[in-house]
Image (cartoon, rainbow, N blue to C red; front, side):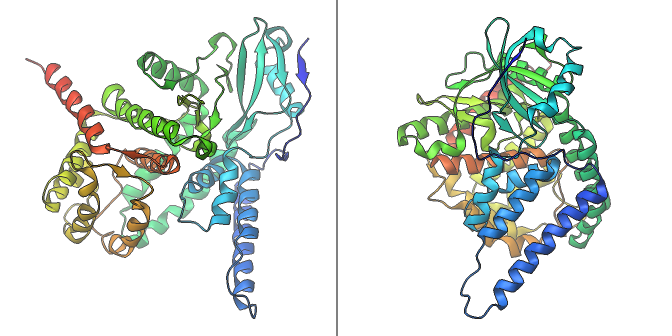
Length: 447
């Protein structure tokens, strides 16, 4: 008989199953937007009010996204990483979506699990904790032990989540034509949509996630400072992924670690990312802090391999070409890199003013021996200052096919390194991996 451990008291609220109705989800988001706009208007016209109180707005936004689940929640989790960009109360409210998402009561999942395990759930698991260890955009996690006593976690998809994702994607598709206002061709908008759709489809495929995890575990089996849990394959079912429990503290709490531990984690994270790209040719593409943990000895624990993006040679060559151009003496070399990446609209004039500003910003950070101080450099603030120049160049630029998830991942890890307070020789680390990658290409080149 399965033993359900008594729920622990937490601040995590419970919710009923979210609506999968496209209209209902659209109205929910629209209503929240109207309430936020109304709140801001009232505050701005209130006599004697010197500044905006963002706390109620952050609370409303966090609660709405948490209840809705699906892709809109994932967008909120991603936005929470924009430290020093969003007002602090809003950023704090969205940050809570990393580990305080409202959960579905286990009683609502038990019959679903019984069907998945053909009525043998009680025979295969000795204990399952009723209180979820975590809840996320597409599912939630429960600690468990099997009949052999192994400490496991069960990652369980929310029933009906596929319909919820389909509803959100339909709304997104309706909104995408607005991108034409910025001069983006319809074909490119369609490619962006397809890439987003593929990402969601991938995250809903737990069998593919298990295969991704096993691929990464094999490649990084002897990698120092990085731990990846194994999958209990015999216990996995459609929509249920059972993994080894690998304890660690959330990356959201990493500021509590010593400077020495944070530096060790930053070095491990940066080296692991470079090896993914230039050694494995794949990228773990869901970098929010809830998927990364750390140990008191400075080891990195990586969870959730539901989003993995391949990095073909063509794409890597283009990124390396841009890296070399940024290290070189002239910003004009960036044009060939953006052309190779597919980020330029055919027949348009090169945005050399933007290239010069980007080169001026990044060139010093990418020189041999340069230490990149992720907090001290405040790169994100300087990039915000480029927004008017970027907007004026939108007629020349276009979304490069295959780069959406890659760029999102790099942005997410920028904020992870910012959170760690990292100071790293990024250029030297990348150059070493690129040199090995190029040597491998020469070795494997047909005679």
